[in-house]
Image (cartoon, rainbow, N blue to C red; front, side, top):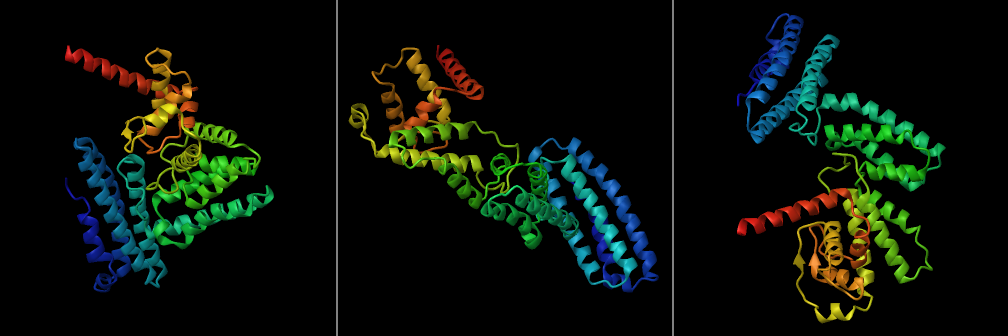
Length: 377
């Protein structure tokens, strides 16, 4: 696919670069002409990118095309920013500002029209940082005021405010993704009324920092009573695991998109806690008699596995004097798609209330198995 930025690149090197401007007279006229060309190129590039989108039939090729042009536009903008920083003439500074503004318009259009291909995790332009930092600062000040009014725990305040402050102090954090995420988060948080709602809001917005994860676990643990028996604690953990599995996160939302979600972090922690407690329990005769070193991997979720066990028992395919035997045996000798160690109480608890999504997944697997049987005949 065609590289579309030759005109802009030539303009930067041959016209608006300070050393090139010194050879031109008058300089002001040259800069006005350059800004006009930037404006025309912006409109031409909009059309060129859209035409490429409709002509290209291979997604990964178009992704590379958009990604490369995005990186180059960011580089051009930062070059112009360096020119502006070393410039003392007010009119020239304004002209450089207008050039960067046209580039930012293009990047905004690309992010809006080609959101599947635009790399949000790229560091934004210096121009982008300068126009967004005051917005993030204003958000941060408003949240500090709100948190004090509704008496939010000091530690939680620091965890939240720190990511807003980080955007302003660490240039590597000034990505398009981080800015859009913080703005979404701010709009949700500014309406909260108490700490419980704030914690739920951060969870749903996939605020997947290690500090919040640790805070969230401690927050849930405060609901546990020290007087609970092991059995009661295990039931509580199984309940939290099921509740966590049913939690919904906002689509494509994450503080750290490259890291696992807060839902996965919390779920794994509770599963490990429950598994540890179950290791302390005496095993049934069935489990002891069939103890093995290796585990069979079953490529479905824990909930789907629980539903299969429920169907096996309900249909009469499997009989057990005590239901616990079925779940304990499978938990001891099998791993799921996401987990190496499965807590049997979590598995058993999941079988009582299966989501429609999981039922459809299991139905699809069963249909596939029937098709395999028909193919063999």
